Image (cartoon, rainbow, N blue to C red):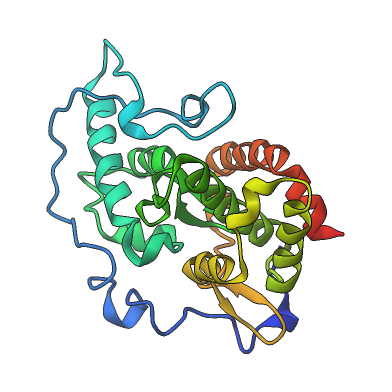
Length: 251
């Protein structure tokens, strides 16, 4: 679905501050890896179903046990996933269109299948674009374990709301956390400044709300329907875990 047209001017194109506009070729934003050749590695890339622990939390890629019998394709995909995880840290994990990432790799060396599999190990789809998984975001690794968990939850919640509604109201989000704090003191660390900081990493201010920094990609799901479905299931699982906050936000 299209994001809220009342919240943006014009066609909702790319934010000028992003350096991967078509005119620049993207070289300033995503490293040009067109000459990259996959090398043998010993770690297999996890698929989406293997990327969560028993509680449904994202598992860091380095914490996944290597698979004993791994083919060359899986080995190359694992190496690629590691490179993508680094690239997606750029801009504090803002969303990147698939076509931009696709342009960074020579098609004869990195197939679409390899690329989407590697991306699915370290990123999630938000309105057709790829955003680094919150569990891998280095800029969220601050404070203690509890604070890091709450920060990751906030980023996931923001991504879910953008995915579902196409826009987000910062005031409603702030009120949702204030309401939750009344019954759970763990969320005392959350304030409007923290919410705004994380919101700015993936969204920009529109007329009456915040919208994604990157224009929706309506073509990816049609090109890769099974991948899109896998990521939809990933977000359904995440939404269940964050149901209380979603309910407070949508009240």
